[in-house]
Image (tube, rainbow, N blue to C red; front, side, top):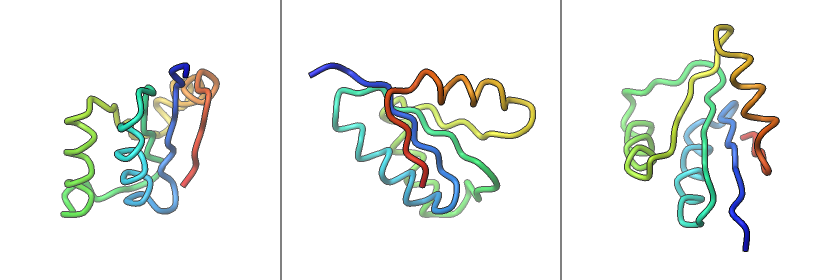
Length: 84
C-alpha cells in the first residue's frame, strides 16, 4: 500500500476533526491538520487531542489571511482531504 498525504480540515466540528486525525496516525500516511476559524486550544478536550497529535508529529496549522496561500498549497498537494 502506498503512503498518502492526508489533510484534515477542522472547520465546523473541530474536536471531532482532531480526533479523526489522531486516529489516522495509526496508518503509515502523512497527516496534516488545518484549523479554519477560532478554536479554544486551552479547553480540556482540545488540548488532549492536540497533545496526541503533537506526540505523533502531526502539524496543526491555524489558517488565516496571512497563510491562505500555504493552506491552498496544502490542499493541492494532498491525496485525500477531509473537511469536518
